[in-house]
Image (cartoon, rainbow, N blue to C red):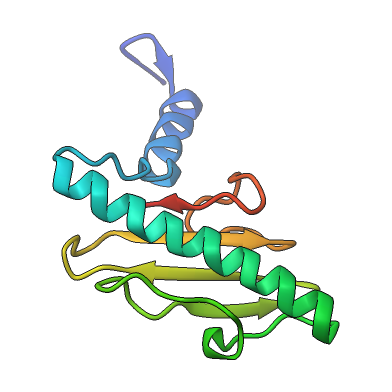
Length: 124
């Protein structure tokens, strides 16, 4: 049976693609949103440097940001760090951007965007 020139298989593939298509990455629309996103990404970059330093001195990563030389920007939440195999990923939020999370990953998949480049923060 054909529906408007498309087979049922093609319709099923299109429907599946729509359901599984990832949400777009966060796009700040105001200067304040851009500033908050920039703070969160800067904190994640700083955490990445602190984790590298910790790894060089201790031989492993840590899931406790307070045990590193990492300093948070006021307003940015405490990073939630998850150790995964030989790597880690971390997420942060900010009260000024409800519903937006930023993440970074090293030797692990980024939880917000699986294809994100290693060590590069993304927001969603």
